[in-house]
Amino acid sequence: MKKSLKSTSQTSAQIITKTFVRLFFMFVLLMGIIVSGVVALTSLQIRESEGASLLASVQEAAENGNINWKEFRLENHDEKGHAETFYRVTRPSGVQDKSHGTAAFLKERRQWGNFSFSGDDIFWYTSSVASKSGIKVELWLNINLVIKAMMRAVLLIGLVVILLFFIARLMIRKASDAISKPLVDLTQVANQAEIKEFPVVETPKEVAQLSQSFNHLLQRLNRKIKKEQQFVSDASHELRTPVAAIRGHVTLLKRRWHDHPEIVDDSLAYIDEESMRMKHLIEELLDLSRESQLPSQKTSFKLTEFTDRLVSEIQPAFAQKITVEASSEVMVNTDQTALHHILLSLLENAGKYSPKESAIKVLITTHQQEIDLSVADEGSGIADSEKENIFERFYRIDKSRSSRIPGTGLGLAIARQYATRISAELFVSDNLPKGSIFHLVFKRD
Image (cartoon, rainbow, N blue to C red; front, side, top):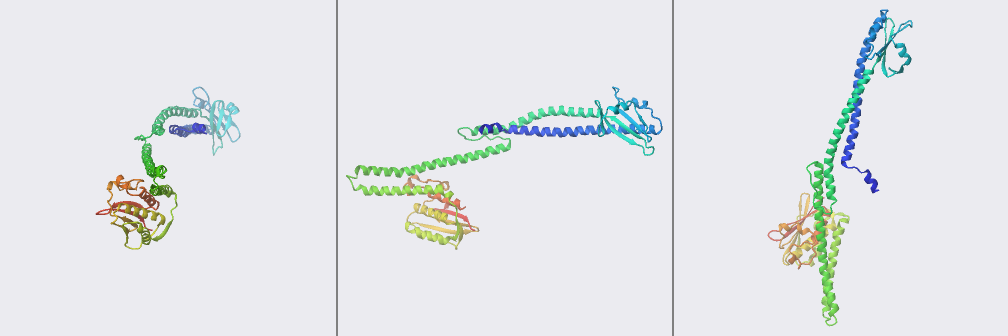
């Protein structure tokens, strides 16, 4: 299969060259037919005009009663002495009068329509009948000169075409190579073990655009690969810490629990806490991997009522006071499960990074065709340079401070992924004079 594919595949230069050759020969054939036809028709019309003049002369002589064929002999022969015209005059009585050589010509001629063939000569047949006398004059006019003129035209066209063909083929080949070379260079770069950037040429424009598109795609892939590598590294680090702690306490219990039974309860409590942390981390990792595959199920519900119910359910777990403010009741049509995950993640994030004596506000505002569901806290705030990074997986602004705050660093990443699922925008702004506001903006139906 590979061998067959390789043998039938063609380069752009070969395709362009073959297409040009086909079009060139079609054009040449058409032009040859047209030019040859024009030359032959023009020459034949000239000969017919000469024949009409000769017919008129013979007709006049026949009506006068005497035809001197010697008068027509010199003008009716070519330079080699071959007869160019033959005449036959038929009177109403049936008596025929023929020019010199006509009888022999009529015996050996081969008739095909208006054409007659005698040896290597070709003749055009025409006739005329006088209306008064009834005398019929027939003329066989030699058209060898017409054929020769047409053959010379065809030969000349053929020589010019051959010359132009080789010149044009070289030019087409050069142009097609210039077009295909950037594509060949791109292929060679693509086959390299490590690709940093594709070369961008000025011409042709399509290849330049293709190279730029490849470079943009390569940059996005490299960024994605780096993010995935960083994700794997962060996930390994987050899992390694509780595993190492659990292994340490297991080793401690194996060595000293007989002599110091009082350490068993503390170690088991720590192992339980770390295992729950691992369980929570694994569940969040699974949410990240499975969320895009879950179908979105939209339902219509009251946003204020939904928010009040969620806040009342989680308020006992928070030290801060959570309040809900809404200018009016708002109906929304979206995925209720996704919205629950987003709002819960934003509230948990506000509870972790806000002082216990502060307040957390959930605000619901409408702007024409948009709904802004925001969570405002009174924490330390987020620098402008960090506002987009906080939605990355495992990202922590202050590593030393964040290590003392429970969590995996995946909450906001999962929240943004859910926001994308429901076609909403999730971003953060400053809560002046202190704190941050996380906005979830989506269109209202």
